[in-house]
Length: 124
Image (cartoon, rainbow, N blue to C red; front, side, top):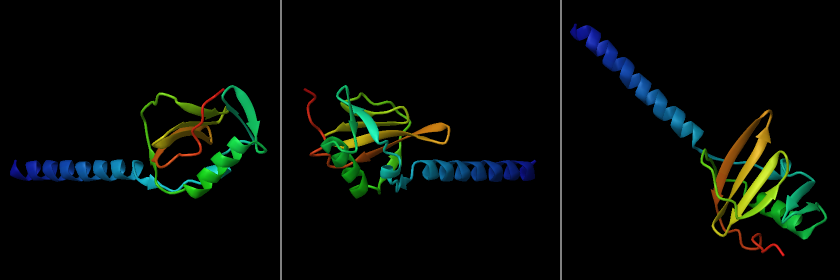
């Protein structure tokens, strides 16, 4: 009986360690180059902007400068300033950014706490 309890205890310990490893892997900081995901046309403030618009250029430059430190996020966010297309959505506030993007057939969502000055502007 004692041997069975030791085996069960060992299996539970292994299961706990494996669960912690999986959670740490899923919620690790990632490096993502969103310039590869940025569509050439994206909606902002009810208007379609292209790569020629200053807003598109600023967002692309911000993504180039902020490739590291993205973290997986399963929660929903209240939108402030949104850039969106069918496969790509960006929510910006003064303290960071949330990006939902299509990878294959699934959508991923990541967040980054960073200075977004210059990206947050009022819609007219």
